[in-house]
Image (tube, rainbow, N blue to C red; front, side, top):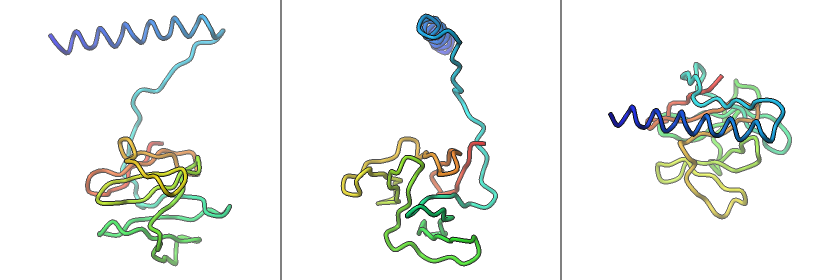
Length: 133
């Protein structure tokens, strides 16, 4: 019964939201509520640094590595990379955290971020990388 009530409440809110949006916008706006997450085959993601794209990956100990060509890898001493919006991300005390200024850090919601390629990435609790295509 609770699921039915929650489903009705969600449907009602979505309907109200769509109706309210249609008042302000001549075209309907649709939001993708759930994505199709797939485990990354390469376990790598792109990130920008000083205007150049690098590839990043984690080792078995969740230590960060980077590569300019995807062949030669080096440890990232700072342990951080940038998302599409220029926020710094890193793994700290077993959590994925981010910062706009490099000084104040907070946990990344759902451990998701948008890569420099416009795709969404996330880690699961065992640091496996997932991508939303």
